[in-house]
Every structure is written in structure tokens, then in C-alpha cells.
Length: 350
Image (cartoon, rainbow, N blue to C red; front, side, top):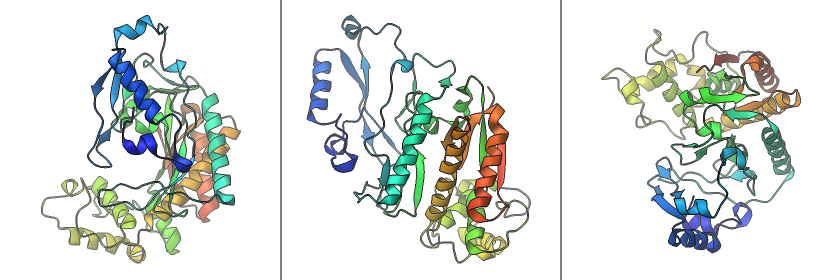
């Protein structure tokens, strides 16, 4: 549970009536009565390194509450007070803050879309196989349990044209290898993913002919692909020419490769994108991605197919993977008038 000041007393459209002094008083009372105990205290070192405070019930609580047979299926998470969030630019610590705004025709439309998706998710048969009694806690401090299915849409940098991804679903907090435990309508799942989406959208924006082959094969021999992928996308999101290696990127390249040489190699392969590198256009491309994914998710649900959004991918029951792939390909072509998108299917097995 959160105990930070900004969560307790944050007001406006983002305020939460659950929190406040009454919440802290109840936590304090239950602790003094030894009905709950604090296991770990929350912290925030940075935007990436943070955790909520963790409390645990004591045996004494079982004398006062009928907890026998209780598991995550006994809970339902209500929708957030505000489903459309507008966040500021990141500060030097990488933190952004919610910005108040005046509603418009677009915000009403977006809010309605998210409400419908949340309604569909709440009625869907989504299970975590073998995990009913004790849910895990993700690295971001969130509980991994299927009652966390209420989504929100977050726009970035104080602009309605930047960002717009959906957040909040339990599957988004899970490690990739743990998603094998998800079951949709009783069957294992498939991840249907847009490959190389950001450079593809960048070429569409530049109205330039796309190169053949893998956009991330900068060296020509397939080596260091994960590193090239991170570097290409970092160049699209950066607001100026990169002056240092992005986090956890340098070690993915051969020793001795200098950043300026790596940037020059990318610019040689993707010369039409040079005017876009260092302009921060990545967040605008993310907005296109988010619009496509919301349209895909909504269309699949309308056709009776449960789909979980995962940024530039969707998770569906494996029997619906082909339908999801076709929907994603159609939406890309509809939005961009290009057929170049590559949509892959990965069956997740346990």
C-alpha cells in the first residue's frame, strides 16, 4: 500500500477518496492492535527503483475476519477515478507528474474507449494458472493478480499527441517468462507483436522508401541486434543527438566500439531518418501505436475475442492468434496506407 504524502493528499481529477488521514489512521490502528504488521517500508530512489510499503495480516486477524477460502478471486478492483492521464515532461530524476486539464471532445472519446475496454476485461475469463492463494509482487511493487484489470491511458510530455499507451493490467507487470501462466478462456496464450514498429512508422512519417531486411541489423551480420534495437529507438526518442550510451546498451556491443561510430553506422543504414533522429519524435510514434492498439483491442472484443494490450503487442488465446495478427495488419495499413508492417505470433508455452 502507498503511504507517501502525494498519494495521501493528491487532489483534483487524479485524487483518490480511499486515501487521506483516515487511511493512515486505520493502518496505524490495525498495526497497534497487532492485526497487521509492516513487512517492508516503501521507498523511492528513482522512477525505476521504487516500491510500495508491504503489510501482512497476523494470525490475530483471522479471529475477526472470515478469511477461510479467500483468494484473489474474492476481490474486484474498481476503475481509477480518472482514466485519461496527462503527464508532464520528465525531470532530472526521470519523474513526471500528472497535469490537470480541461476536458474536450477527444478526452471524452478516449475515456469512453477505456471504459468499454475495462468493462470487457472485467467480464472476460482470464486466469493465472496455479496461482490463486498467494499472488506475487512485481518489480514495480504492484500485485500480480487478475483483479488488476482496470486500465488507464497515459499521455506524455504535456501533449495529447505524445504517448497514450494503456497501463494498469497485471500482465504488464509480469516478467516475460511468467506470462506462460496466463489462461484466456481456459487456453494458453499467444503474443502477437508488431516487429520493428518504431523505425517502420518513422519511415512512413519521412515518406521514404524502407530498406529491405531487418531494420536493426546495422552491422550486416546480425550481431548485437538487441543493442542496435535499443540504440535506434533511443535516437528516435532523444530530443538531441545522443552524447552518451543509453542505459544497459554499451555492453551489448563489441568492446572498443565508440558511440559516435555506432551512430554513424545507423545513419548510414537509415539515412532518410536523419532529420528525425534527436527530435523526440518517438513519443509521437508511440501515440500512433497506442491508437492502433486500442482500435485492435476494441475490434477483437466486439468479435468475441478477449485481448490484453501490451504496448505494441496483444495477448490472446492461442486459437485466436491468427485473427489478432490479421486485425493488427489491417489497422497498420489503415492508419499509414502502408503494407510494410510485420506482425509476428509467438505461442507462449509452459
